[in-house]
Length: 499
Image (cartoon, rainbow, N blue to C red; front, side, top):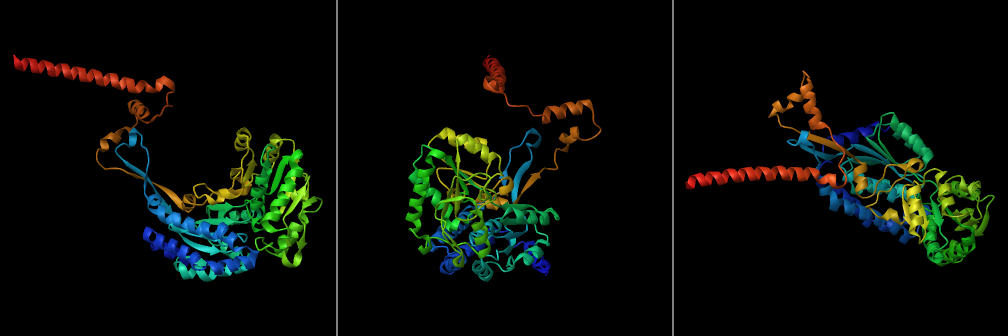
């Protein structure tokens, strides 16, 4: 299995320069929009087949997000690609200095199965906007969605610049043997290490969008009915198979019972008393993941839900109470509809627990106390922090989306996607005239030259307080003196003329 010719063809297309113009990039971005809008029913059917994903949920969490990102890129392309002027010191006053955004070249985009359309198209939009070619590898786990990507991408995008390869572990392994200019991977941290090791052989930069156990802290003085609705929506959409889904809840023990009752009420409101019959509730993607999630419940007390149907890969929205940090469900990312509740003394203990674990992709805090939310913000590290809601930050393209540490490397969405697939290329343009001013940098070196170099090049910290205004006062005094001398001189000349 050899994909060297495929990559070679993409390199030739990139070398032709066709991806450099904003006109080409705009045409491809419009192609992405058409791909979605003209095939919304086909996409929805594929997502329902793979994940039992409701049409409305598919539109909100996948399709609209991609369309908006492509439209934003089209509207912003001229400003994003415009050379960026930079500040210059005295040594470079006569020079032209700026930064240009240069496409990296041929990108590899490896998608994930849980949002199989969004997690291919969103990074692809960034690659296109930045002027790259791309090899696209959808996840084989979501088979229907992968077939859609393979069949429809060539119908709407430049066939010479974008190639799709479907397959499993063997195909992915063979693809990773090729050299790329950047690799964008979405998935788990174990596979990410394999991707990163393959990239290291060619010093290829990577963007890794991973996950982790995203914690939730709920303060005592909150509206638990509202909290439960927002928590349940973020946790149980896509049957909990979301990288930024709340993974576990920490709250003071005295509110645990009421919180459980509110969550139960929200689950029934969203999915009826029997979520299995609801078109709004998803399924686990396959039997392997069903079995994995099922095992996580062992040793924990079920407070809400707990129903299963292996034939349908169905696991109901499930809440586990009085969970200990040593329980099975607290060891790895759940990636399913189990919600453990860990009683804690207060927010300080919750912060301590978060800081003893791997850095999460997201952190959620429900509180009316701004001091508490500020403590979480300042004393913890996570890919993102959201106060009084869950998941919604992923829909705001002016915020970077990505992890830190074990939850990911790099970020994207909006302009951050464009930056992820671009190289900031510095440009300095000088004139060949007036070369005599450069004598101080040319050998032979002398103490006199060194003195001039130090005076011109050495920076000093900015002065604080009233001292910061001293240079302006000094310059003002000098100019006042000069004008006075010039004025006196002119007055004397006029007097002599009159005489």
